[in-house]
Image 1 (cartoon, helix red, strand yellow):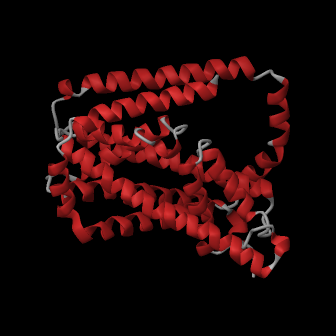
Image 2: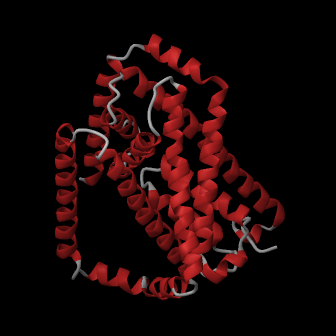
Length: 325
C-alpha cells in the first residue's frame, strides 16, 4: 500500500511540474543561463565549503573517537552517504546505513557511529530551525504581513497535521512487540549517545557552529543564482528561499532525488520573496540540478575508488578503505 502511495505522490508531483514547464518560455530561460556562464564554478565552490562544514560538524560529534578518522576520510564517507540518499528511494535511511558500513572497520564501534550520526542530524535540524527563525524575523518586518499571512496559516496547519498523524501512529505502535525489540537494539546506541553528548561541551558547541555554517553556505547558493540571473534580491531573502526549499525537500524525502519536489519548492519560495518569474525558477532549477548532478558523479566516483582501493589493499576489509593507517 505504501509503495503505491509513493508512486501516486511522485506522479502527482510530475504532473504539476509538467504544467509549470508547459508555461515556460525556454528562450528566456536560455538567456538567463548564458548570463551565469563560468560563474557556475562559484556554485560548486560554495557547496564544497558547505559540505566541508557539514563534515566538521559530524567529526566533532564523534567525541574522543574522532581521532580515529581524518576529516578527509569522513568527508568521503559523508559524501557517499549523501549521494546515496539522493538516488535511493529509501532516502536518508540508505545514506546513513552506508555511512555506518563505511566506518565499521575504522576502530569505531557501530553504536558509536550510529549515535554520532543521530547527534549530527539533530544538530543540523536545530541549527536549521535557528537560522530559519533568524531569517524570518527581519523578512517579516520588511513587508506587509497581510499578503503573507495565508502562506503561513497553511504552513502551520500542515505542520500541525503531520505532527498529529505522527503522534497518532506512535501511540498505535508504542506497545507493539516489534517496537520493544527495536528499543532493546537501540540500548547500546543510547549509551553511546550519552557518552558523546557529555564528552565535551566545547566539541558540541563547535559541532553546532559548523552545522550552522553548513546551512549558511548552502543557502548562499540560491542567493548567488538569483544574482547571477540578473535579479536584485537581498541576502536575507536569498537565504529564506533556500531554507524554504529544504523544507519542501524534507516533505518529499520519499521521492528519489526529490524529483519535481525541489522544483516546486523553488517556484513557491521565489514567489514568496516577491519575484513572479517562471523563467527564473526554471533556470534556477536547472542550475541547481546541474550542480547536484556534478556532486552525484563525484560521489559515484568516490564509491568506485573505495571499492577498487579496498580490493587492491586488503580483501578482508569487505570493500571499505576507511581505516586507521
